[in-house]
Image (cartoon, rainbow, N blue to C red; front, side, top):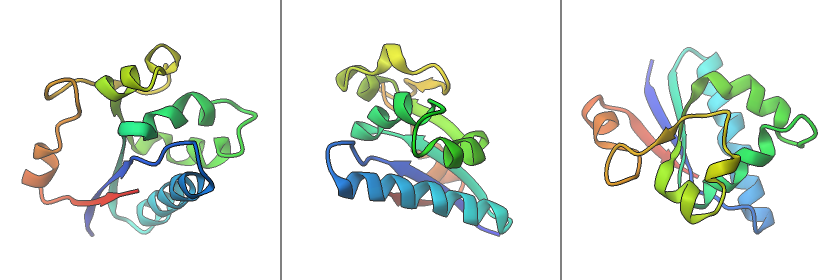
Length: 116
């Protein structure tokens, strides 16, 4: 069993970003169902996805619901910088290190970090 932290950085402006989001969520589901410890953090432009995927009409809502328990939270600073902070209510904002999530603890706990 491995410990994996998936960081979603992909923004909403391109098809590539949409593909990266989709791949990250599907990979999280597969790894979790295979018995691995999986956590997800939305960071950077990736914070823009949260107001969309939490809506029932979103194309990504079903997979979001399937991995919602794996989501640690979203970068507090970046959610503000990308103007979505007031639209994020489903996940915790993480201002742990200078307004950003702290990844140090995951490194110290031997998580493999995957960026999407």
